[in-house]
Image (cartoon, rainbow, N blue to C red; front, side, top):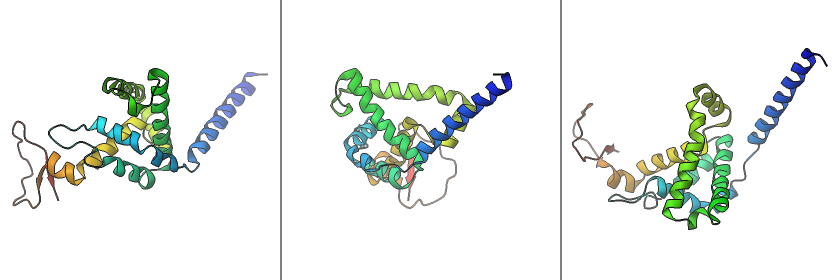
Length: 189
C-alpha cells in the first residue's frame, strides 16, 4: 500500500469512528434512568451547596430543578453526558469504596467529587479542544451539574430569600454598590 492509500484509509477510519460516536450521542436518551437517580442527584447537589447557617440544596429542592432542566432544558448530548456521569459516579464508588455514593462517608464523597472535577479539568485547560468538544457534545458532567445546582439554588425561594439578601422592590437603582464585610449578595424579584 502506498502512502496516499494509507492516509486515505486513516482518514476514513477516523471519520467513521467520529460518525458512529456522534450518532450514538444523537440517539434519544432514556430519561427514566434520571428519576431512578433522584437520591444521588439530591446528595450531589447537597455536596455542592451544603447546609450551613443558610439553607442547603436539599432545603431548596434543587434536585427537582436539576431533573426538570435535564429533562426539558438541555440538549440530548448534555442529557446523555449527565446520565452517563451519574452512572460513572456509581461505578467509581463501587470500584473504590465497595458501596454506592449515597452510603459513602463525607470524606469519600469529597474524594469522588475531587476526582471527577480534576478528571474533567484537564480537558478545559486546552482551550481549543474544550470549545470543540462543548460545541459538538455539550458541557462535561461536573461543570453541568455544578451550574444547574447554582442556578436552581439561586432561583429557589429558600436560596433567594435566605441564602441571598432579598429586596423585593428596591427603592432606587444603585448600579454600583459596595458590599460590607459579611454582607450577602443581592437578589431582587
